[in-house]
Image 1 (spheres, rainbow, N blue to C red):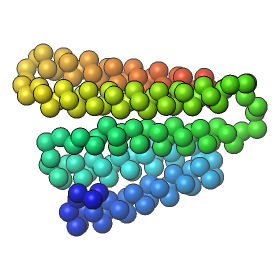
Image 2 (cartoon, rainbow, N blue to C red):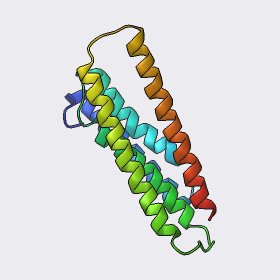
Image 3 (tube, rainbow, N blue to C red):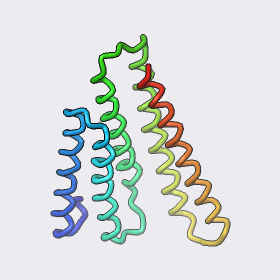
Image 4 (cartoon, rainbow, N blue to C red):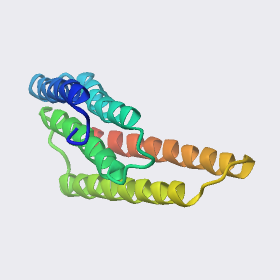
Length: 155
């Protein structure tokens, strides 16, 4: 938001405030459906800034993506902790390792994709296939994270 112009900065600050309040309401009141709304608002503010800024590449994108991912994971973890079910020994440590690994993996993947996008300045079917493979890999990562997260919550 610091790089945005005056008009969009005001909009982005308001969107960020609404996102933070939405996430706070979700965690305090136990409303899990509000977590993705909050993350989408925050990510939307960033995406809007990128669209209006018209910059070729933003090197902070992987860090922002990890921040959004960790915000969602930690919010869901907080919601899981509201349940009065006693977990098995070591479940908390496994979840810490899982979330940390997920964050590091997302950062490395984002940085590699950003570096590849910066170095590849071409087009054609080969680049389209690489992009499709990257999208499939991203969806597979999200699926693995979702299945892994549900397994921890059930314990």
